[in-house]
Amino acid sequence: MSKIIDVRHLNFSFGSGEMERPVLKDVSLSIEKGEIVLMTGPSGSGKTTFLTIVGGLRQASYGSVTVLDRQLIGSTEQVKIQVRQQTGYIFQQHNLLKALTALQNVSMTLEMHDAMTERQRLDKAAEMLIAVGLGDHMNHKPEQLSGGQRQRVSIARALVGHPKIILADEPTASLDKQSGQEAVGILKKLAKESGAAILLVTHDYRIVDIADRVLELEDGVIRSA
Amino acid sequence: MNFISWCYFPARLAWRQLIFDRTKLAAAISGVMFACVLVFMQLGFKDSLYDSAISAPVKLNGDLFLMHKQAEAMWRPAKFQRRELMRVLGHPAVMEVTPLYLALASFKNIETDVKRTLMVYGFDPDSHIFDVPEINNHRNELRLKDTVLFDEYSRPEFGPIRQLVAAGRNITEINDYKISVAGVFQLGVSFAADGNVVTSDLNFMRIFPNRNHNMIDMGIVKLHPGSSIPQVQAELRLQLNPFIDIFTYEELLRREKDYWANMAPIGFIFGFGTIMGLVVGLVIVYQILFTDIANLRYEFATLKAMGYEHGYFIRVVFASAFFLAVLGFIPGLMLSVALYHLAESQIYMPMPMSPNKVITVFMFILSMCAMAGFLAIHKLKAANPADMF
Image (cartoon, rainbow over all chains, first blue to last red; front, top):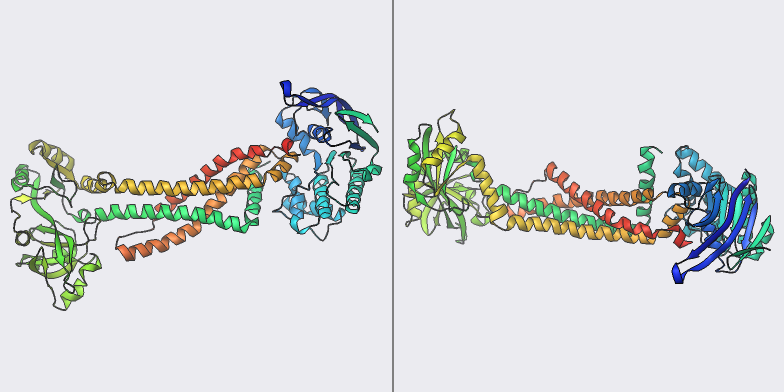
């Protein structure tokens, strides 16, 4: 099966009763292996909410969300943790651990599994940092890095575990044009090499050209752009 | 995932985050250290108190001990008639009985003339009721009129008696009665008395003219070798008047200790101090852990989004608590050892740092930090990735 993400008739609301505010209305969307899908839309349109549901961070109750052949609607925490472990997350803020060096931050992704030795983990993390162009900043802590460098560390962190899915929430929002384009350029190149599906939420139209497909989410409804 | 990495990875993250902010780490360590020193001092004083409370009775040489029921402890005796003790001689297992006279009195410092209270023990010099070599070696001097032996472990405010005696300046007053110090022995001070002297029963009556030979404070009973002490105790208890208590050696020691632990509020005070020290430490460690979790909630939520389980963060918090316990305990222990030495040199009471005490306090500190960790983990719920992104 080549559909990595398959969402059918997803509905989601915040609150309940009279306070209920629908955020996603009958959203259907599927993403294939190796595909880069860009989701745009004004703020408050439900993009981030959609991303957190697909990433197994938020529980939705209506519709069907199949990620890596696992149904996330009504799933247990354990299933969601398995999905998260195969998902590379890139956040709007870099969200690096400020007590750790770039290298240690990247190898945090690999520490969840025992399969590797510490040496292998560090080697792999170093390789990934070289790939994002930070070979000479490996032992810097986040506060010693620029915004663009931090975001590249967080891309390395998301990709180092060879995830099947990469979810990126406004990865360029806090970057200037040049470092933003560099960052998504690296993301695209590395993701294509490993065949991961990418769902990228943004309202930064400067990076639209990296996508295979662009969708627009407005008031919780998907429209092809 | 095996057990080692199950503990090791969260512990390593906790360690890296602890050493990242050195100022906060120093504050946390001082908090634990403070609690540690407080507990060590409270326990040290308490043990020292209990040990010193029995410094005299522990040297008594006897199988059974008679005291008046109203006597609270040896230093607060109640007099009873000598004939109560003599009745005991009727029992075939009893070999020998010795009356002991006890009183607090002022002793005049030979050099400064300042008077200070100490404990006076009066007994027949021919009896062997104290297991203290120097007392038994000076038996002949004790038989002389108006002589006493002085405890050189008494507080220094009584003067350098050993040197004064050696120099021949051995005349002073006890209870305003002139005596000469014939020599020194080693016993030890207690919270009740700053010093001790022993003298003969006859001299005791001279020092305390309103005391009567027939009213004794304690009776020491020695049995024939091979007698069953508990059995004789039970038999004698039936014969004695109900206002007389009869104790074995162990019971006497326990009673002297219990006096300070229960009758006097001192045991409670030290217990209370220990608990307060732990509570203060608990609050400090909890506060540190809690604010740490609050500050790191974005980082924790990020790790959760990457697939880390909730249990991992619980282990991170407990590992931090453990490191704080160890890091605070080590300087706390060193400081406490120094303070014990200081206390020994200032209050002349034994304050040994026993391995037992070290382990006890470490366990206290560890439980304190574990408890703080336990209280802090509820804050982990704030690190919910769905609410953050």
